[in-house]
Image (cartoon, rainbow, N blue to C red; front, side, top):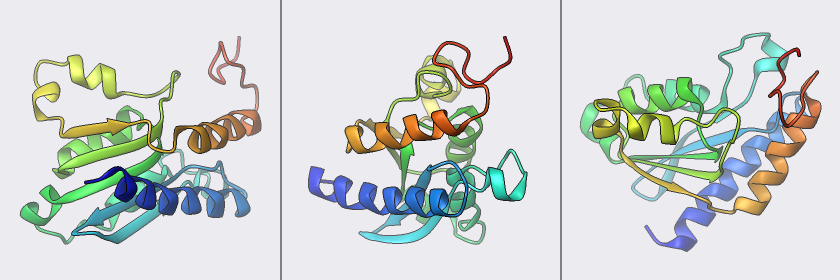
Amino acid sequence: MQKADHERFMHAAIREALAAEMGGNPPFGAVLVRKGRVIASGRNTKTTTGRRIGHAEIQALWELRDVGRAARAETTLYATVEPCAMCLGAALFTGLGRIVYGTPDPLGGAVAMFSAHPVYGAWLPEVVGGVLKAECEALRLRAMEQAEGWTETNGGRET
């Protein structure tokens, strides 16, 4: 994939994030791409559904439930923010061929943790970070500002 392709599909993930925000949820978005076209999309739904697993990546990955393993291996996940452990694990066990994210998540991103694991690190697909980083970082910071009790040092946990 070329840089322009990554940016085009990250723009699609950003549109999902903005739609999430317009719907009253944190602005996180994701799309799944296979053979140059978006085949599934997801946006954060945690606030409106009250379900803590309502992450954008999980919403998009659910759409692959009837897709065969070979097709999943040709699929790329685009996420506005580095996936958390739950979402990265789901992507890993789904058998995706590539993961592309916009901005690192210093509080919850799991790429480094999975990369260092002796088993999961070997299973991790190609990972590309920093695509449209500034735009995605602005969305991440807006989400953090909306989170009750959030500070840069506590990650939203009570102190």
